[in-house]
Image (cartoon, rainbow, N blue to C red):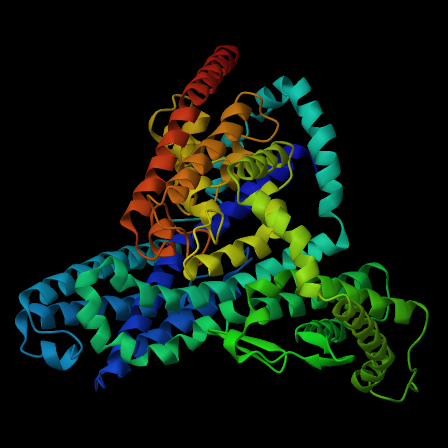
Length: 621
């Protein structure tokens, strides 16, 4: 497949995905709005809690519909949007009825017993309901367009073809020393690192942990909102805070157990990679359980007293029989234990692999069911893992330390480095450099950094002030996608004179609002493009610097809640920081600076393409 064919395939894939993008994220907004309504209704014993509950059930059915549609290339999707259409129709009807209750009915206190019947409360609620009405109406309109096939994949081929016309113009000019240097110094070494089995397993574990952190963070946001909007304190005291111990379980069992999730998934993925690529009889589930087994054995704290080894009990420091207890349970199962979980998972899987390779396993007759046979296959490896971890633990305890304290030294240095401004600049230089030579830099770099960003996120929720936490990257830096290209997309739509750039801009502006810019990456293209390489480096680094120092100087709050990475500009920063409006302003400021950096380069590039199009028109004439 040629380079242009690959670009066209990628562009069409993104266009196909983007048809449903607006519907999906508005659905997420409604899901959490109805969830909060349900929680408030439960807290106040409201009789009409069936209303938000019904909408939640319908939204879940619509979510399931999107899961089925993911990757579906067929245009015959009319009947497959029935749950989506039904949900938005019901949501629209519900908002209209509630709007009538707000202004034209005496039933306000019956429907909303958790709100005081005042003009201010009616006005605020009416405003939110009005926003919901507009969103539901827009979504219904888009659903109907898709159902009537007014938004078609076949319409995209023409746009894709036009947007790729200029690729030869770029490629002919890209034979420069800069890209040769990047390929040699960056793409080669980091490309090899990205192919390491352990790196791929860590990337998979990081991606698998994100849904849990997002869910846990949404419930944390409920608790911190009154700190920003103080007028909500009485409302929250009478509603949400009455059941906060209940719903905060969703936070403590996600953020408080991240090391456990990470260790289990890493063990599973690492074992699966070896089983598939080396054709070994390894069961990924056994690898996951062995990893968890090794990790749990390393958690209790021990010491030597009078020549005997015993577990530490220190009630003043909340250590009971060796287990340190924090606010959300066992302290070392949280983000403080992620690096140890990684080490123990790697150790357990390698020992499991060694046993299978050397045939140190119990072989069962062929008549025995596969599940039973695999259970016995993991028996000897489990003993090997147990003895190995016990020996390591014993040696470290005899030396007056444990594996958590040992690992904290090198990983603490790496964490401190990434939390510095210089470390941040190195990170974004590497991300941009990898993208420019055709490698997804954000996936490689930030997947490896996930343990650090999640650890910083938890620390920030407890009062720390780390910049690189949660979705700092997508909230402030790569607004519009890698390279901070939202401003570039706006330039293409409103200021570009080149026909092909205008077409590409119209096609890419909606996904850019959700931090998706593959249409730009492969459509302009940005990869191997010397004309836009400089702003592609500088824009993210400038945006990162602004946000970093705004957080360091405590002008804005740090990220305390994990947001979905496609959150539109301002929203991710606002909610992720716990409702700090200055964080949203900072996000727009970062995007504005990125636009100013792109502007002169984009204008020059646009002028070159206009000249090329004029020459092609003259030749055709």
